[in-house]
Image 1 (cartoon, rainbow, N blue to C red):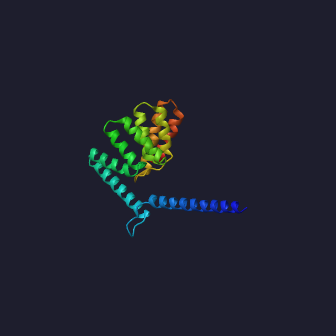
Image 2: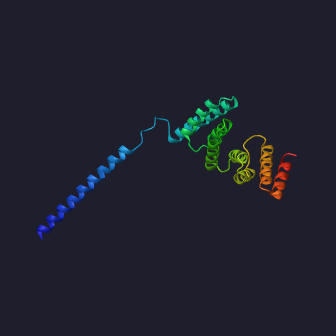
Image 3: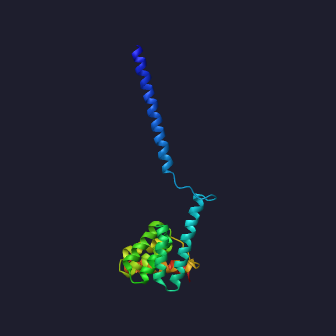
Length: 195
């Protein structure tokens, strides 16, 4: 009986020591796994805001370069912006725009599609991909993109005129698909938006 008590006491002591060792190991692992502390007065929210601000600045600079015709400079800025936020629909659309303008339709189509995947509500990417596909004779795919574009709101200042242009292209695509009724409906929508 006494021997059992000694064994039970030793067993409890071993379990206790194991628990202490496991706790110590867990504590040291957690201490090493923690992120590097941020400088005083900053937070992860501040860091995220700074990152978003930097990306927005890069996008603005890229769009200015596009307006000035500096496509290579713009592309470099867009790649830097995409390194910060790989799923930026705006940056992906702008990159596709440059690729389309520099006679790289396959790359443009891929980036327009990535922009749509990142933000399905982005009118510009749907309309650009639809125009590109229509120009390549891919009328079924073009119709799908133009129809999606007509359900969305353009980001630019003259939304009605821009959307009317999407309806006009949709009408041309429907005409190529030999669907005069759909072509007529789309053209009437275009006229309503910009008489």
